[in-house]
Image 1 (cartoon, rainbow, N blue to C red):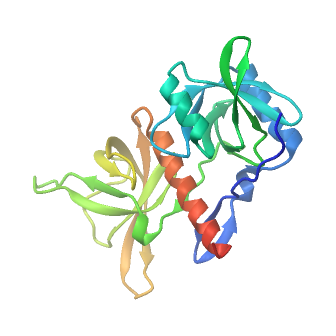
Image 2 (image 1 turned 90 degrees about the vertical axis):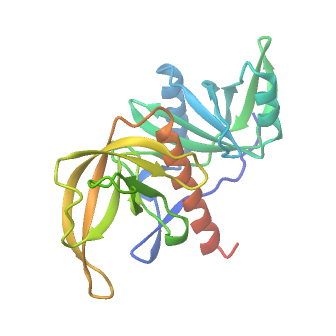
Length: 255
């Protein structure tokens, strides 16, 4: 297996302070091998995005040893070519129905019992929500998703900036005396995530609370839980979170 390759440590911005997402990050090599082996034992599918792009293919971890892993290739030659030329692979999977994501570097094509596969060093860190929680990302003002809600009076959809997002839901900010959303009610709208195609999803209003803004204005913060996310939407959300975390870490390092 190849030597270790450097990986990007994700971080996020909250209340103006930079902090590492350490609650969910596994960096112990023994624990990483254990998670990857569990993916093999549970036959967990891995969704692989070469260079984190929209294009992806279904794969699986075939083998894990002390230094690296073997990842199944695609049956489509053009996809394997894209993997070969990629500088990194962004991978999503599950262990015990808990989301796992990791970045692979330094991968290379190998022949495994007459089948194409890819060999890579163990990831230096694995994002794993051990407590079945959803990591929420506070979105940057200039690069945030938007949620379009139908107007009750039949006018154009109401476009609202998403304040924070996770694989479980989103938060929106509305006027203090808002009448658009009611607690425990179900709504259907369009989530528009940067660098991804907008998709329709249902949401349920789980909490509403008053929040004073820095300018003194009272607003209502609404927490919405996803209901019946369309297939692949979870990956779009996680890729957005990963991209923003990576940009913030690069900025904090002066890159």
